[in-house]
Amino acid sequence: MRHRLEAYLDKVFDFSRLVDELPEGRQYPRHPWHKVFDAVFLGAAMQIPSLLQIQAECRSGALSKRIGRIGDDTLGYALQRQSAEPVFDLGCEIARRLKRNGVLHSAWSRGLIVATVIVSTPFPIPLGLRFQQDGEAEVPCALALWQDLVDRLGRRFLDLLVGDAIYLQAPFVKEVERLGLDWAFPLKENQPELLREAERFTAGPPAGVQAEAERELRWWHLPEVDWPAADRCVRVVKTVRTDHKRQVTVSQEGAHRKKVRARWRWRAPTSTPPISNSAPSRRCSSIN
Image (cartoon, rainbow, N blue to C red; front, side):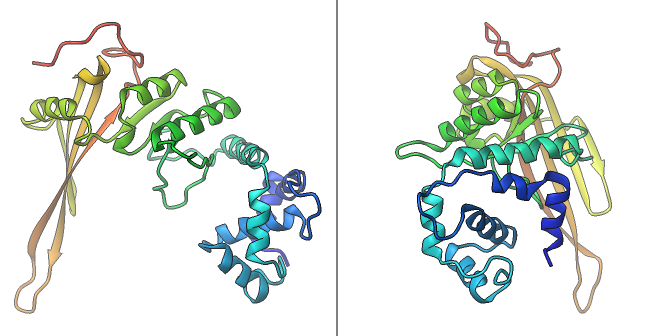
């Protein structure tokens, strides 16, 4: 009997048919491409970290009845000779159906469809994958991937791009906005002038405080902060969360210790006033 996951995929996405239509990259395959794909796909779904372990599962483990014997050399040989474009298109087709079915919406994002360049959610849904070429840095590689995704999914598929601080670079931000995306990146020491400005304007009392039993959240909101490296302004949000943890000892209960964690997050504006999502022709003045 097929696993419920595969039954669901066939019912919602007609997944088996889409996989069967993937072109074969080898001339005389001993194992058809759909068998290789199923082995790797199900191995990934089971969080099996290597082709060698997938081979073991196919021989005498969880995939032995579903896939059957297949070697790790065969898997690697087939993957090396398979074009990535049809698999990429398959993933985009699944993503479009997920969006139509409302799977990509969540309460925490307030209706926005958010994508990350770093997998950080409990159950991430990958939209695309691109391997870095020889001599290619991470940021240009990520930008090329986003361009491919926008070409296939359209400019209005995503609302917000979230990534690590390495992506807070003027050329990358400019290209992301040219693709029609808003963005939110943390700020670290790689943008020292911007960091100093933000620290100066958030040295005073916070704009708001939200207190709960186990934690307290304070935040500062700066609608316009000068970003000299990009010759523009950005919106700044700083949050400081204090977690209250109860410490229990043999002689006393109720003692508390506090753990403070500060995090900066930068985001492109989502409304036009007071600043727009396009780079202004002149630099804005600092907030006094």
